Image (cartoon, rainbow, N blue to C red; front, side, top):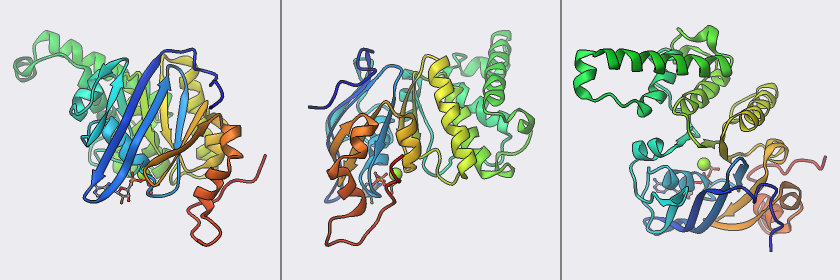
Amino acid sequence: MPEPRPHAAGETVLETLGLTKIFGGLIAVNSIDLKVHKGEILSLIGPNGAGKTTVFNVVTGIYRPEFGNVFFRGERITGKKPHQIVSHGIARTFQNIRLFPDMTCRENVMAGRHCRSTSGLFSSIFRTPRQRAEENLIREAAEKRLRQVNLWRSRDELAKNIAYGSQRMLEIARALASEPELLVLDEPSSGLNPRETRDLMAFLQGIIREEDLTILLIEHDMNMVMGISDWVVVMDGGRKIAEGIPEDIYADQRVIEAYLGKEDEDSTAYDVPAQH
Ligand SMILES: Nc1ncnc2c1ncn2[C@@H]1O[C@H](COP(=O)(O)OP(=O)(O)OP(=O)(O)O)[C@@H](O)[C@H]1O
Ligand SMILES: [Mg+2]
């Protein structure tokens, strides 16, 4: 039995039960049960091809699962469309950054906020006072997020022209602009240098402390996983092979084998970090 997690007292924000996604003959996600509690950072780890991103894609409505269900705050959201999932309060970033490259940073973040706007088509054509007021609110919310990720000075630059590390933060700002309850990040530190990774960790720890937020993370940087996670779930070959607090996962033989391969395999997906 896994140890009780520090945040288990919090209500369940996201739950998957028996989640299964099949591509052709490949069972990419095989009967995955996940429970994410309010206010925690849960990291999903595992070697390349384990099925991590596919779990995210099913949770965020990109794929419909063959079997199983997704519940958000107790409500079944299985099979809903991505924009519906966002309006429920789940926002995500992508393993490969997906910004609008020819829009400014500010416009990118405003686009993230638009899912919460309530003006209909009529008012968006004729720009009623209500729509102008809403546009101002969206702008203010976007500006707050740009400041928060330290990109205020780049607000009028095109997204494609800012540094790679800044693009990763811009994508997080765009996700936050929808005021999600659950922030879903697919390898946010990928391509960042060690300093940027440390800044990202501090940023995530800050927002989880200061905002009413829960974070579900896929991460390959094991120092980051060990440093910020409340709970770690390990996948391999589509299955959940272990879960627990970071210290226990770190020492789990099944996890070490999944990362390093068994004795007769020489594939090393990535390094298990030195004990610290
Ligand atoms: N759209 C798709 N069509 C067919 N196969 C897919 C599709 N998406 C993912 N797969 C396959 O499903 C398996 C799991 O892929 P997934 O991207 O979820 O792994 P991952 O754990 O995120 O890996 P990585 O660490 O490399 O990002 C892989 O074998 C992958 O090739
Ligand atoms: Mg992936």
